[in-house]
Length: 281
Image 1 (spheres, one colour):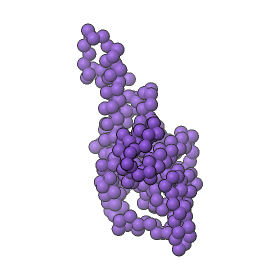
Image 2 (image 1 turned 45 degrees about the vertical axis):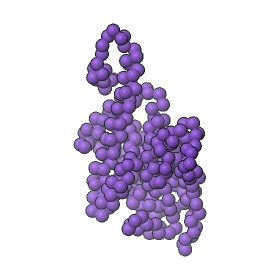
Image 3 (image 1 turned 135 degrees about the horizontal axis):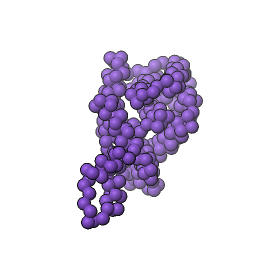
Image 4 (image 1 turned 90 degrees about the vertical axis):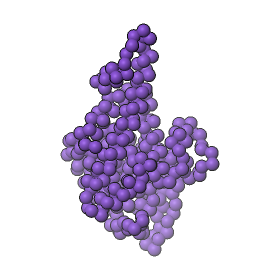
């Protein structure tokens, strides 16, 4: 998928979604569902929506999974509000996001070097591993997070093109999850930071689909092992395009239904003609 094609999809999405009541809310529901499902939530997308929209719990599903969904949705709204207010990234701000991600599922972790509580957004004081990978020494974490924030804040001022903005969002995602500063919730927080960058530039938000979890992990690992972040960029542009296409299809169907209701039954108007007009608006 060429970046120009993704840019075109983003433009179409922004045009179609403009003025659509509650569209953003349901996009946030989708992002919440997929991000938490990647981390082990067993709620289906419909169950996640029912929980967030109506407060209806899913029968026979773990209470922890419900909390994971509720916490993530709260953290997402908080993060997007920070972007709207153009709050610069900082270690304390990221810790606040991470604390919201783990509000109801946090735990106290005791290590030789000290105790930390994940629901407070404390940086880890011990070694963290994922598969065969060991993440940076915990003593380096505060400095590495500060450097990430400083670099991101500077780049936010400089980037101009669609590609530059997207690459920055994906790079913050990649760099943060590669630091793994917390005992848990790193993946969720990294995806929220990606959405923060996109929201700063009024871009459509990205998603990583739960069904592509293995490819996601492989892209992260391959990019690290080969020291080539473009591998991760390619994966994320593919996910971005996939999400935008799905959203555009839903928006077109919704607007088509609204327009068809306004058209006289005696006047035949093709779907193609209506779609062409919608995309030009």
